[in-house]
View 1 (tube, rainbow, N blue to C red):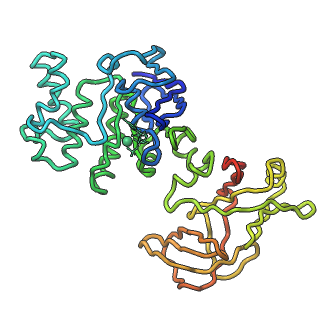
View 2 (tube, rainbow, N blue to C red; view 1 turned 90 degrees about the vertical axis):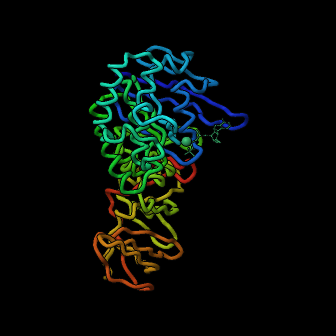
View 3 (cartoon, protein in one colour; view 1 turned 60 degrees about the horizontal axis):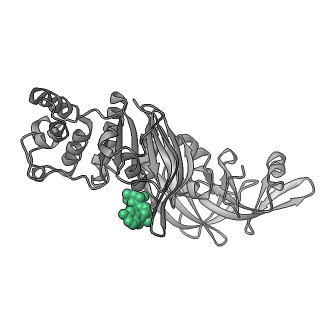
Length: 361
Ligand SMILES: Nc1ncnc2c1ncn2[C@@H]1O[C@H](COP(=O)(O)OP(=O)(O)OP(=O)(O)O)[C@@H](O)[C@H]1O
Ligand SMILES: [Mg+2]
């Protein structure tokens, strides 16, 4: 069991700042996910924790002990790399046993441990095969078995499910999460897949261009995104953003998007008045109600494209020149150019400051 503290880590490669003052506090036994787009510094962060890179600035602590200057072998972490590499000439058994062999663990004990971990990952029948005789998902589990077998303090997993087909990935997500909880080993898991992050993590750090944008539980990140980057990165289809100006008419306050005005209640109007005049209204596709007949307070829109998905329908609608996506549960019989009327669910609205992109409410 290990707590990990990354204190203002910086890593540069020439002019590129791959990791820019990343600070993370990861608790004992936590399943912690680093989420962000390609090139944002996820792998570099993992390599710093593993000791495969040395930071330009900042320190790394395990359980309060500064490990920044420790070589990888003394940190007791197991890393599964983005392109997991098995030794092609070795059997599955020998691949899994390898970390124990180099530690000179007695043969008897190696047998026992490999058997145990193989059962855990349901690869017991594959121990005599060579990696090339395995499917991608089986190879993946062998790579994980090799990481798990020596019971490290920390698991570092870099996109370990990226090479699997969609079905196996969904299955392995649940398996891995259950396994991590059973073993209780502190885990840092890297992915650029927001669904994977939302379904597996205890907490997520969303990273962009080497900078942490927000740290929180999946629910916090979904319901209270700290800025427009996080808001747009989480959720599918992504959140709709509409540029607005704050206008007041006497006591009343509105967000004016040009094509429509959204009336704010007094409390929100007062908060926004103190923050400026230009805002971005954010509303997720699943938080917009669609009506076929006009109702008071609804916003008129025109159907552009309908994408039926069986259980639900994605509607692409135009409010003037704005394209808005709506996720409708069930099937909706509408056709292009038809008029519909929208209601934004107030309790699910997000308002960001236009200039800073930070959450205003
Ligand atoms: N050894 C290196 N030399 C030079 N630049 C590097 C090196 N390693 C990483 N970088 C750069 O640092 C940045 C972060 O890279 P990193 O591999 O950490 O991204 P990532 O978030 O893991 O991306 P991906 O999702 O594509 O794996 C990128 O701009 C990358 O090009
Ligand atoms: Mg990477």
